[in-house]
Length: 285
Image (cartoon, rainbow, N blue to C red):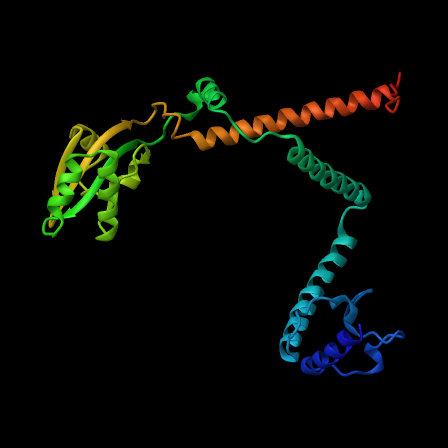
């Protein structure tokens, strides 16, 4: 506390305070501000200054905190004097405390008891029962796209790999695209929102035109050729494949599992307390 007082004394000088008896209490502490019947003391700033903080920076911190405290204290005074007298602050505090305790204990229970692994079978079953809820608002596409300059030294290599798209060749094709910084979409099995794929295409190509082009085609766009392989596509209002909504399904499954677990634990705790004779319910007649 001595070091803090010394530091704050320097701060008071920076802030233009005078160390008079008016701001010093009987126990040697100093008052930084007073609002109605509340006071802010030097001791209230304990722990606010990181090691090595200069006197100047300490003064800035002190001033900022004091200014904020004064405004909060004024607001609190007005609130206490203008809120309805029927407001039960003690009850609000009890309810808030109960909520914090309950929420923290529920989190402890979940960490101790809840299984977070989801099997493929469970995921598929949940998808089959709920897939209607995941109807698409926008089209999605599974496709390969490569934007190739018409003049590039590795064009022939790219063309060969593209036309012979085995897993090995696609890996090599992706590597060359990254090396030459060519725009590309070559993640096998990944569904993309149409808008994210359309950025690689001419503006006059919309989803309907894209879908009519066929499975494997190219588009000329100025100095570039755009090579496209359509693997699959889904229109708005269609049901998306399970892999497209997998993360959403997992979140919903875990939420359902969490709710069920907490309800079961509440019932178990109720039954135990009841058997111990710790529950009494009094009905008014």
